[in-house]
Structure formats: C-alpha cells, structure tokens
Image (cartoon, rainbow, N blue to C red; front, top):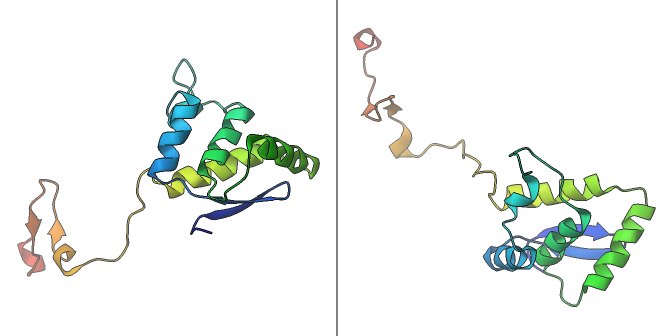
Length: 134
C-alpha cells in the first residue's frame, strides 16, 4: 500500500494517488488533460462523463490487479449502495486538490527570512519606529 487516499468503490478497496506517472497515463488514456474534463466547449464548467471519472480512478489506483471490469462492477455496487456519480466526482476533486491541480496550499508558518514586512513593490522593509511609516 502507498500513502494514497483510501476509497471503497462498491467493495473494491482502492489506494488512490495522483503522482506524475499516474497523471501521464490517465491523460494518455483520455486523450486530453485531466483538467479539460471539467471544461465545456464555451469555457464553462461541466461534469465529466462517468466512464471518464472511472478512468481517472483506475489510473490513480495504486492497488495492483484491479481491471476495468472490476471497476465497472464496483461502480454498479457503489450506485446500488445509494451513491451517485456526483459523489464519485467529489472524490476525484479531492484527489486533484491533493495533487496540486488547484494550486499549492500556503503554509502559515513564517521562517526568519519572512519576518520583514513585504511591500507592494517587492522590497522588504523593516518597521522599527511606527512614527516613520506613512
């Protein structure tokens, strides 16, 4: 097992992680970028077809031996359990977020080099006397 996200797809335990190799393989299989799945022809946001969501899950899965046929069977059981394709989409959105597709999360901790105040012109300044500021 890897340090991926554990996900139960209708009894199939998947270990999901979008590393570089997985992203390349998914995009090759889809014939497009992962992010383009969510973009319509006019630039609007769309929900991808379910088979494409399953391709992303299959490509991100780090558990060996799970075939497309297994994924389809697991998806049928997933739906029978009351889940929806939108639930599946939410799992993929979390994966994309964790992989950095929506940008990196900022770290709230500051290092010694970040203690100086940063100004709009990019010049760090040290505020020593509050009376000297604007």
